[in-house]
Length: 438
Image (spheres, rainbow, N blue to C red):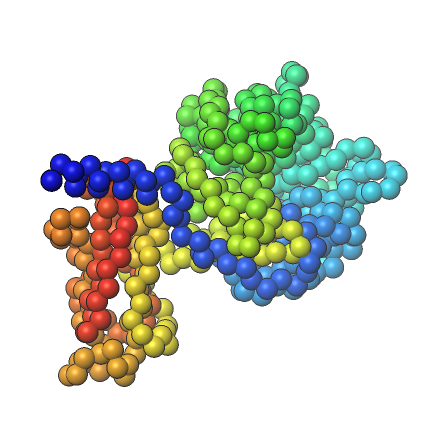
């Protein structure tokens, strides 16, 4: 009988691990001032951000994405690139849609209240990536890689090695330092390319490492860089590209999920997110493995960012803005007028090795409190148990005032499997299940 119960238990773990039980609801749609396509989003700090896209749209927030206003970009063509150095100084890129075809550089020095448009010095050059180290020195990429030392008034060609893939389009830049950085891009069915510089951008070495474009790279540290490459035709699955030797060599492995990865960011060193149209990809182990989930209402998302670990912003078609909210570490308290106790599903779930448990303590006047409870608070216990009922951790065991809290549980040292967490406060008691997968 015991063996049969163990057999059933392990079958349940396998079944649950294979199911997509990642909690939705952390990405939620927010109000938007536009119905135009939003292609890029960029934040310079935890509160100041911009999003750009079709028909010259630029929108700006100064309150973490809660509200947005439309700025006058002075153009009506799609904005294809965006970068801000600080809350005042930024650049954007667009292309003319009538002859002569060229790139137009938009620049602001007052947070986008005013944008000044200047023609790129060369015709028939189409730039879509821009990156600045300071107000004078920066890089732009697209048809080729070019640099500036005067804030973008003039540009010079970078020294790029000559090979089959070096002339393919650049889509984005990512620098580890001023000296050491990468560009990524390519063209469908030809190659996904990374360009690498170790001498402040003076010269770049190009390598074809995937069959399709790489829209963005994530630099985990000076040695480990990863990216995702997707096939627009859907014949081959998304490929994970990775280097652990600072870009001297790269591996390519298909992840078994199909689509085009438009953007790729990490909320924490372990938790990464990618925008794949009507889906998000997410990783909970530093990008080694990936799963997928639908966006809210299957809205199309093209870009995302995490201004701080506690929240993120994603943008996409029809002016959609999604916001990701999650308290970050330890036990955090927020103001709450909740009228009842609540214990929420842990996040992430499954987890490895850290997860967070959110719960709400109501005001002391709520009938849920037992007679004789201290009106200044209530004694709260939050504990974790294994499947045999053995206590493995005590997360909270003290009096708390009314409010919303988040407790962090670290499963390091435990074996993979199902665990239970139980909240007790006054007459209230509730238990939820979570899965630890190493």
